[in-house]
Length: 129
Figure 1 (cartoon, rainbow, N blue to C red):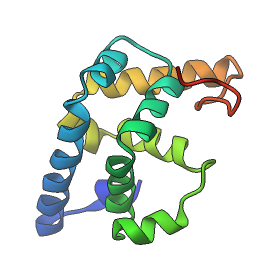
Figure 2 (figure 1 turned 90 degrees about the horizontal axis):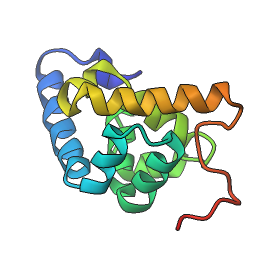
Figure 3 (figure 1 turned 60 degrees about the horizontal axis):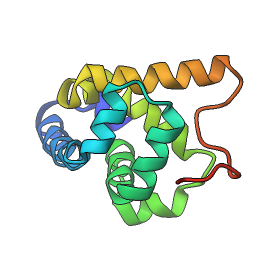
Figure 4 (figure 1 turned 180 degrees about the vertical axis):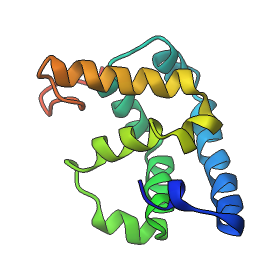
């Protein structure tokens, strides 16, 4: 992790405030919360986050990197996004604000997918439907 885990003092207060805003947006999505608490596969969870809450995911990554969202956006790639978002959702600094049960569900889904050889994100050929 980057800035989220390492911040101290005034920076920690700022980051905690930003995290609460971002995670509150995600928490308002009842279907996402049901997926997280129900142990849905991490690929499905990530798909919903990227499709319905892309800006929140971008802000979360930018916050961790200490960049503004536009600068973060220019550095993103489809192959780097899933792992980075899963890592942040599984980080204790984030789960303390969002709820450990939901984040643990994401991490468990990612671990199970890796053990089954399915990866931690949906394949390009899977339908979102």
